[in-house]
Image (cartoon, rainbow, N blue to C red):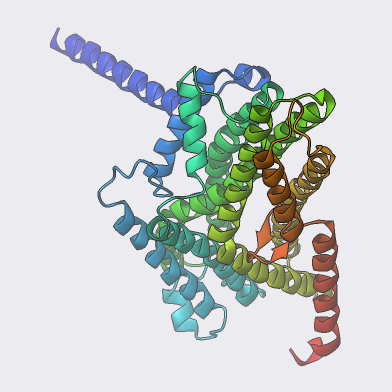
Length: 435
């Protein structure tokens, strides 16, 4: 009888444990089903719950503490950064040393590959670039009282209060709501988790496939666990910044489209009031100020990542095209890294170029506005119009790299030509026979 009772209790306990685990998994996935993907009608409540979940995810992975409620957030983020910098220099040292004792105790994952040094250097680059993002986030939190991200908090407050409206037209508000919900919140979380799982599986597969001795295997497993535990929060931060830039692009494009539609409506009406004109120029000035704030706050991180990323992209491309490989998997891995950097650089260029194109259309629409404000001439409105035109003429509205280089189609072409010139410079001056 006692055995039967124990068996029943075990089953009940196991069932309760399984149910609690399933509930946690469902909360973790925040009910992101196939039905939610196909349903394109994103309500305010859907977006608000997703934003709250994203903020909790940012805090739990030590990306950003928007609410500033976590006591040791800054110190823990700094610890993650320091540990990853140590890991980055660990792989950099492995890429230049030939000492077998150091290689053995350092748990080199690529010891059996003839391209060991190159692969270790690629991993070093893959760690050091997210470290730059982490440094930027720590600096951003300390240096700026008002962040450019605060505008999304204002957008959230507008969603929570039905009587408040943001500077979107109804069509653009729906478009931005969908893009914010699916791309920046849903896609970010699951894509980040998928990338981290893929990173784990890649390293574990490499260690198991190249198994030689038990001692080496144990040391490699210890080092890969140390790497992945420290690297996962860092990678979350890097992907977060990348997708937040996508959110900024979507937000800016939709606001500019709304302002252009409002400006075109003022032109078509002809007999508009001074109040409507003042409201339009006020919103246009706020948008220009916010874009200038974005450019000022992301200036150095954009410059650093573009220089570092573009240079290493050409370096990897040169190595892939000019050298032979004993292992085809290594060449495919380098091609994948090269393609990933290209997608990030040119994807951002395309999004930021789109902002510049829409801003130029808004500039033309403002030109078409007559100085006469409709019912009566108003000096204040006329001066605001001249101020807006002078500001747009002096500095184009859009995203700048380093707050100086305007991103448009011309810059994208110039970047491509410069990268091509650097590649041919490598081919001309580096003699692979002397390697």
